[in-house]
Image (cartoon, rainbow, N blue to C red):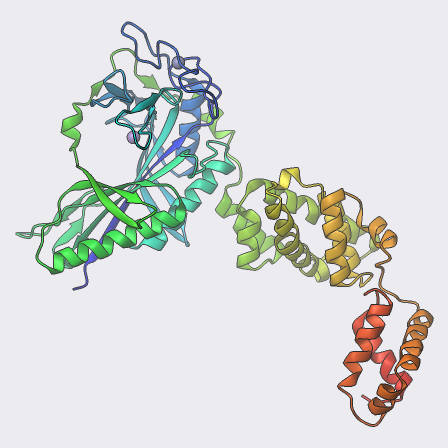
Length: 505
Ligand code: ZN
Ligand code: MN
């Protein structure tokens, strides 16, 4: 039967701070030898005292403001007690009933997906189980890394939207430089809560709880962890929907449990029966005084808010007249969006000096630039695994290339050749056009000479052409293009060729 699918997301993201959450240890320990980035505080030695990292708090507050949350004026840390070898203290310092931020939303496909809360906490160490051994290795370099944890309300209904939420969330964290949020590196970890309910048996209280109607009972929810890519978010949720619905159809009971996504076998596997929050015996952290988040503090954080991805995309649509897909690609990354805008302002300046009406031609020029950036420049950068910030092509030079194409000084094949050379060598397009002899042949005499020599070379074909075998015209255009090394404009060649052969079009 068809069930109502109810999905909530929990996302952890490592904050981009210099030091860890409660000690002065380096927070950038990637690639360092295990257990070389530790101190008595993050190793949880008895008698040590944690001191909160102000920058980490700022970053979570910034995320809270960007996600339209309310901020708790009084917030505090709490201990979450559980035993695991990668947690030497026996508890994690987190936040329970007074998170930094609450009641927010993030836009996905034009709709607001509600966020329950955003809190701050510390990360644990990392354990690994080398294959073929019976022991576990522990690395505490990551212990004490500041984490942001965001929880959505259970308002998502399908896997594709959940995946988009995660993508938009990552984009926002990166725009604000809160986190690098690379899922493959574990800098951003998504977990999904999924339950299936019979229609008409439940209602949502609007505050994070799915409740049964009257005498009805609900099916348990399952939490899925170990999801390390956006693709896996979608696949894991769809797998659970199928698994749970098949079990329910057979009359089985869904167990409330934590399952892990296995990327190789494409399935979720039971890990443990889920704890309830009572099992964690939360209580206020006695070693850290409560936080009072006053107006001054918030104002300072607010000053860091910049134009966010969705707003930027909307502006690209309205201000530049770009289509949805181009605007989406160009604003996916803040550095790329800034780079693109730098190129656009170069185009504007060029239009101004040449007296070109921007109102009339601006959208055409911007679209041309957008297409050359997304289809050609990004292609080369991706092939070489380079970020836009490392590109040898400058916005000025890209704009110059676009004007050459716009003015028909070069064709698109020549443009591609020039851009590729710009990408490799960083030279300017006009210089390359001359050096590589790629300028479109505009001199009618040069063109006529080329046409005459080709006709002289193939007299028989020319005769057939005159007698009506016009498909042969393409052959002659190709020959002229080859002779001029692609520098001729094919349409002009066709025109001149017909005149020379005396064919009326
Ligand atoms: Zn430390
Ligand atoms: Mn957590």
